[in-house]
Length: 280
Image (cartoon, rainbow, N blue to C red):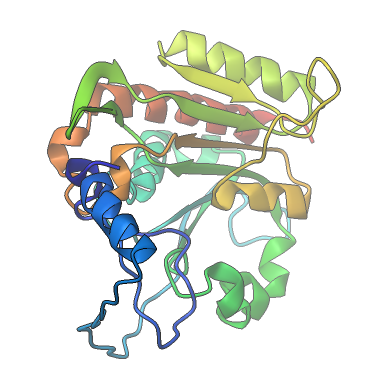
């Protein structure tokens, strides 16, 4: 990468802590490092860092449906993570709040299911989520799964596309491509396509990774927290922008497109509504 793109890069996945520093160099400096390494030259790397203990939280909330608090209550789980290096990486929770905000205008008596917010704090911890599986809310509260009937996930919303041009990392004038994942059910897939069209969601690919491709091969994987729908076998949708400028801590609000964000949240709200009404 050029220096402009590499500056402020936040590596992912985060490696477990160990006593060896990492060093990233841009392609210009890297060429010199390779040249010196081939010549047998030596160098010292000194990591200046501090480790401090902290406590973070998995945040749980509810927008009650008509049967909330009763054995008849069913829940649609809304999930994302609450940590990241930049506005693009860390805004999935704002998308979920947009969904909740929309449905809050509908009287509780007319909401057939409860919306449950599950905002996960483990996304950027060393070793990632599974290293802290025992601290997971649903591990501690396994009964909480029993009333969940569907899932919606949002991450990396409102992204604009960046590309390297010589030594610069600059916007192309287009939106960053994104994914909309659906479980393997034709009704769910059809509704996903309709939501994209209804809300003018640009440069998005509706994808069902459980189905083989046209020639029998894989269609990729489902990234993000929404993929727990595969483990839990739930009807679900998840969206994520492809991972462009959001990697760097230098990616500020100028890398965010609010109109694109609104289109994505509107489409995911529409799909949440479909899951609120669906007969499972």
